[in-house]
Amino acid sequence: MAAANPTPEQILIAEYRSSVCDTCEKKEYIKAVNTYICGECGCPLSKKVFSPVEGTKACPLAKWEK
Image (cartoon, rainbow, N blue to C red):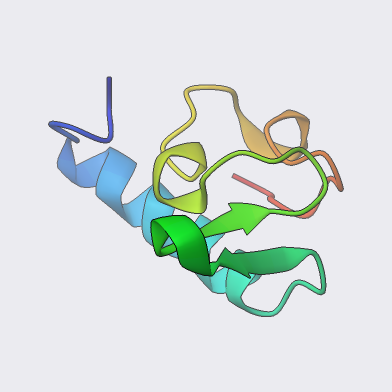
């Protein structure tokens, strides 16, 4: 899993994706588990941003370019 041991390129992609999610109206904080999720698909963002799926296909709202 890339989130556990990311390459430098994967880190850059995850940082870009996180910045997009930070401005998204679907980003939700779940207090019970102290994490943010994508309100559209329910995935934890700390893992989702490392998805190996490329670009707009990885984001259910097609907001990620890479």
